[in-house]
Image (cartoon, rainbow, N blue to C red; front, side, top):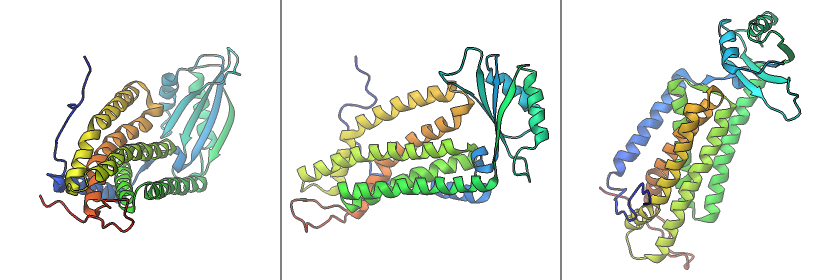
Length: 320
């Protein structure tokens, strides 16, 4: 017996309540934008500056015990991760401890580092700090600029790619959907004040790729059906195309979400922010591929016959 997330053949009208779907997206984007302006993002060490400490001990590392020991020092945001390397010996256990810069300081003070060493020695008496490196606010500011440029460059590349592969109407619909996904993902981090670091930028770029893949699958079917059903109204062709790809879209999204939810529950604190961003991104990316990108395409109209260079583009807009 095969599991089907949606029936093999569907005939749902995705544009019947298009005002509701776009209205919901508009409200969520406004809330995200206002939240970003009012309370901003809860930047992590990558963007706020801080100190990275490389520890080494003969005793196996217990990240939970390390975190509990440092938690008593009130040092603010602290990230602990174990370092694995085939070159390490059996008694060589290495961890990276990252502590955010204290208010009004370029980095963590020497006294705070000494306190951290004493606290960790309660867990592993032979532990030592083999390297201590600090990142100041200036470098963190440059990282923010680089991250913004990376996301904008990815969206611009998508615009050019879709424009060359399809038509400019498809490109605009895809980019609006991608901007929608990025704004809502940044917004949820602002609203919930979840730590925002370089891992989240990686998640945003991954979301752009995932959402684009989903949108291109739908757009490919739309283009095929536009050639096949040249006399059908544009809205009917779009509905038919979305219904034909719905099973694939839902199967891909649900199986991806199953893996992400498992990581969200069992993956630990180090990757939780990244996985949360990916989980939210898959949900809004699937939504935007079906409801946002296709509705923009319906508004703009598309060329109905590619064999004629000057074929008129449709201009119909849903009236329901």
